[in-house]
Each structure stands twice: as C-alpha cells, then as structure tokens.
Image (cartoon, rainbow, N blue to C red; front, side, top):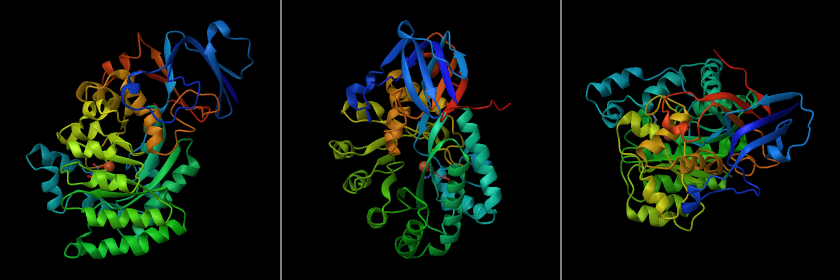
Length: 415
Ligand code: NIG
Ligand code: FE
C-alpha cells in the first residue's frame, strides 16, 4: 500500500536527522515545510519535500491536502485505558464537596475500580478497553502507553496485562505496557503495606517478567499510597527483571520522589503538579523525561505542572492524557495540547514537540515515532482546512482533525 499526500499547506515536525528528544530553548522550534508532499509505503514514511521538488509518483491512494496541515500522530505516554465501568458517581461526589483524596480514604477511588475490574471477565475488559483505544486513535493518537494497576492481585494484574497484550496484537497503534501494581494498597493489606510491597517485589514482578508482559514498572509515589522506601524497592526489583522505571510523582505532595526516580534512571517522571526547586535540579543532566498531565489538573481542579519553570531550566517536557476513570476520564490529546498552551503557558511549538517527539521518548519509541523523518513509522494526522497550526490549541474543544493514518493505514471514520 502506498499513499501520496500532496499540496500540504504545512508539514510539521520535519526532522532531516533523527532527533529523539527536544529540550529547553529548542522546544520553541518546530521545524516545518510549507507547500509540501509526503509519501508513505506500507507502514513507513519514505519521502517528503517541497512541492517544487515533487516528481511524479504512482501511489495507490492520493490525498490532496490543499489548505490542510499534516503532522505526526500524537504520542500519549501515560494512560490507564484498561479499566472496567466508570466512576461518574465520584465525579458528582466531588462536585458536592469531597476531594479526590477524601473519596480514596473512604475506600472509593482506585480500590473502587479494582473491585469492579476483578469482577469483570477478561473478554468484557478487552471489549471496553478496545472502544476507548479506537476512540483516542480517531482523535489522533498513534502511539500509546497503557498501565495496569486496577487489578491489585497477581491474578487481576495479569488479566489487565493480557488485555493490553491483546490490544497490542489487534490494534495498529504502537503500544507500550507498564506494570503499576503499586497503584494503591489493597484493603486486605491496609494494616501491613510492606506485605503488599513484598508481594509486588517477590511475586508480581518476577511473574510478569517471566511472561514478558511489561516494558515499564511504575509506582504511585504519594502520601497514603507508596513512600520512598517502597518506591525504591519496587523500581529496583523492576529494573532487575528488565522493566524500565516510570513513576507517578509530586501529584499532591513533593517529598523526594523525583530525585529517587532519577537515581533509578527512570524513563519518565509524571504528574509534577507540585514541584520544588530541588526537584527541577534533580532532573538536570539526567535522561529522565518530565511529563505533564494537564487534563488531570483540569478535571481535579488541582495546580497545573509548572511547565515554564521546567522548560526554562533547560529541561525537556512531554504531554500526556493520563486517561483513567478517576482523575481524567478523557484521552483527547488535542485537549491536552490546548490546555498546555492555555494553562501551562506553553507555546504551540512547545506543546506540539511535547505531544509528539517527547511523548515518543517517554515511551522509548522516539527512534520510530514522533516526527516526520524518512524511515519512521507512518503515523500521521491530516487536519481540516485551517489558517495555521496555532488553531489546533486555539480552537479548544473543537475537532480539527480530518484524517488519521496509523502505521500506513487510513483509519475509517467512526460516526
Ligand atoms: O494518574 N494518581 C494515580 N493514578 C491515576 C488516577 C487513578 C484513579 O483515580 O483511578 C492518575 O491520576
Ligand atoms: Fe496516571
């Protein structure tokens, strides 16, 4: 299968050499080509250039992108899309005055989702998750990370991971898998959290590794969940078993989790709504990607990550959705990019870099995804006719995407 996209008004994120991460000042630059063409063969970008240099090419499918913008599909490096049911009742409880933390203390929150998931069949869980995955792909996401963490028993965590494996097999999206057994302390371990950490370290991680079901290991490092010692043990055990650390950190409280994650050579540190100067210092000179999740801040009405401070300190930043039933029941990367510009004061160039190449980096995928580069996978968004790429974040809540191509296949529009 070959696709020619011609007369592209502007082709974004064009990288002649394979850049894998964009940091600090460089995030302000989004390289583009005006009046361009792009050629895809099978699942790969094989050629692009200005229309003035275009020579006749016989493609099976030709798309005229006059007035339209073309960019790499979004790379969403932090989601929990495998879950059962929803938590809309807790949403109403929060409107009526309870906080996210109070709901969790009453046994709601993650434990609520875990109970529902444990009682949902693997087939049903797969079907519910597939609907979410297909929906976010329609919204332009072509690569996605998916976490476990609503199982909280060996059996239920394995069930979640098998569902992710099946999604990976059946879907065109590039999928990376994360073991997040340390998402909450199950009720039966309430009085003995260390025993649950023991179970994660000595049973769950080895079993998951043996079945080759996870690329990353993650911990919700937060007051009332897992402390620095627990986090240290879990990240170390994951690393021994070939899983790269990632971490939920500084969402509500900052107490050293960022530096600890950097010590463990984490691929990313995610949330970062509460950042101290020493947390920013700890990230300098590391290979760890800070990840902001603005739609989580929006939904919970908590502070937004200080993107300006992070980027102005010379660090990179990625943007992701955090799609989950409790804190972010939305997987719309377009809304994330808009919110990053509106609330985090990122420029459109910074936000697009953060949601493409840096998102790919946060999943260890930036060699193959996240930019327009010869030899990279053909994950592409074609917009409707728009005045400029600034309109993507500007027209928040609007859907300006006309066509999504994932691994060289044009997605059929869902009605
Ligand atoms: O990333 N903070 C921890 N985990 C999720 C929320 C999980 C839930 O409420 O179900 C998050 O926001
Ligand atoms: Fe999360």
